[in-house]
Length: 242
Image (tube, rainbow, N blue to C red; front, top):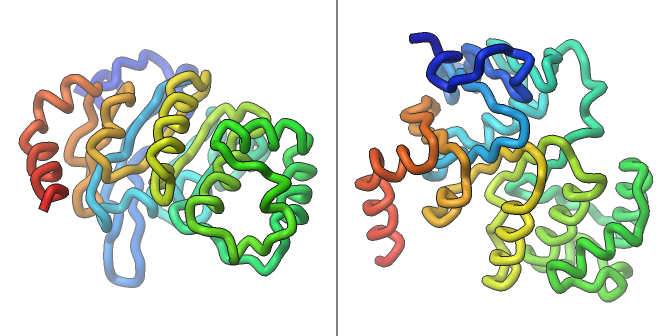
């Protein structure tokens, strides 16, 4: 059975994301090994695995931030040959870049680049209980991790992106903001690829890709993954309680 048959997608016209035989090396170390998967339009895919399993590197490859061997297509276009789709993507990294700018200046520049407006950005911030005016004059580097996360999430959600790449998006958020983000993601009408090591994030995915040591250990619909890998979830849960 081919990989296309396994994911039940009859033709590449239905693929929003196509990854074929992806390898990533850092010097002599292979950190991603023969990764292949396909993502349908509006599908919610969780990249699940422990720290160091290759989740962040995979997302960076999908965005064209890393050199790699293999093939990646977004919207049917090879990312090494065409970048015209970049404006259709929202992205939040696991580690925010440190920048010596005022929050207000940085956000205004980002909003202009996205051809959006400050009012829409403020509305998204409000949904995370963050008043933009209260942080606009502060330096980005002086914000708490949670506040920076809310700023970058709000920017990523501007203009209703067609694909959303989120790398450990719940990190640094308080419980209330985690719940709010979960609600937002559940109701978003776009393709989502979300990396996480948190057990609870698996449950709102349509599909789970389980990464281990740079390889795909499993690629299954959510319910099949939970049933087949319950021992993995239990082990991670038990470990988190110690």
